[in-house]
Image (spheres, rainbow, N blue to C red):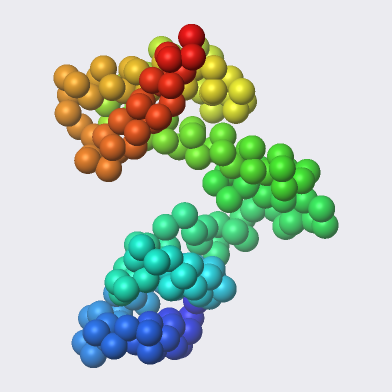
Length: 186
């Protein structure tokens, strides 16, 4: 985005949220600094999603909400130019031949990011659970060991207490909604 595009975007936010304050120059500078790296279309799409999401639509969107998961323009340019019929993972830029394979690949990338984050926070070596080159695992290989990984996180968190409340809730939900149901079916 350009500075002018960011200022226009701030006017759009103000039109939807009268309580949005853009009267101080440091606020505008902060928005400009944080939105310039992204494509205008991506930011407007995230804003549209925010407006359509009943859970949060009454709140003024925050910069980090609008930019979360977006790829900066310069990173997009580094990726190979998409060819007709080719699709690229938003997380790693890998080329996929169709949308079904892309969705599976992106699921894999998202899980790898989550696993890496949890391992980093709890100082767990992912090789202890996954046994080979962690980043080369397929989605099927991840699925085979994912439950073991969740149990390891629970065990480590019980002694280290390093996860946020949101992370703990996600782990707890997976444990009760997936692992406990699997145990009941055995």
